[in-house]
Length: 351
Ligand code: GAF
Image 1 (cartoon, rainbow, N blue to C red):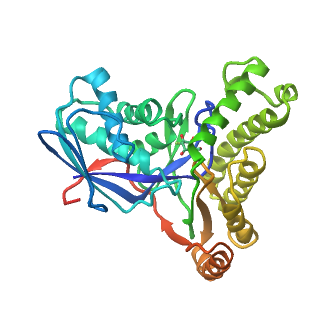
Image 2: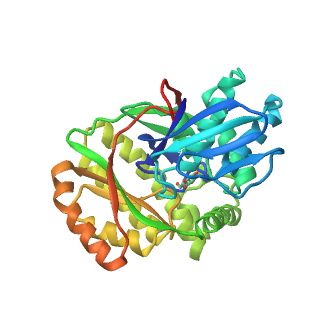
């Protein structure tokens, strides 16, 4: 079987489609895939009785589209893909901002590459997943998720410069601190369309300034912008700086500063980039002055909060937060500790 992990992003949110910096790592929650030759394309998930069968590859408006999109992308440059049965399983929460879609794309591209001996590199596999998401699924995302899911290494974060598409592994020595995910349980229907709107606003900001890339923009240029264009662009410049500061702090073993930068990032995503929501803000507000750092993670409009905390501190407050959240929103709050792990791989075992 093959498996691909989800990812969290320590910092660098909404910078990956703006030629900026990101710092994700793959987490120990996975989508697993078994694949075998078949007469038709068949898509089956262990979590559902439904089986999708296709004589001809086409849009299904189901999770199978992530795989169909990948097959189309492979066929564009690497020849015909014969029919397979795809059987998947997952312990990665869906719609929680942890990149379940990138995991599904990357694990299918990786498995097809292996089965057909295409000899594609991990970068090419990641880019096939990214193109499937943009060209077929319709989310105009950046490369962060697919790169993190494909290229991560245990005990490291992956610093990606999305302008040059180069990356560097940054050792993660967190001492007695850990990362946690708190899933708000909110999946915003508007997520994809709002995401694409943010992307267009950034393009428009560049046009007003008269530059081709955010990499050529300085704080002085922001005086040419107003309203949402100013807010979006300011977030990008600040967030890129924060990524570099987090890397510096990690190298200096200064985990408290990493935490402060996470809180700053959240404020910016809430007020400047406007991708948070009431439920997530409630969680982050509760955590202030208690844990080391916390912020919304992923595309936003729901999903999860990433928390950096000492274990005893987190354990002491999480039940109170759960109680308060469930009282206010009537939603069960799920949480778990995340460990870094390797990117996509082939494994012995069953799905
Ligand atoms: C989603 C996208 F898929 C990523 O490319 C990235 O833009 C992220 O939102 C926000 O940082 O996960």
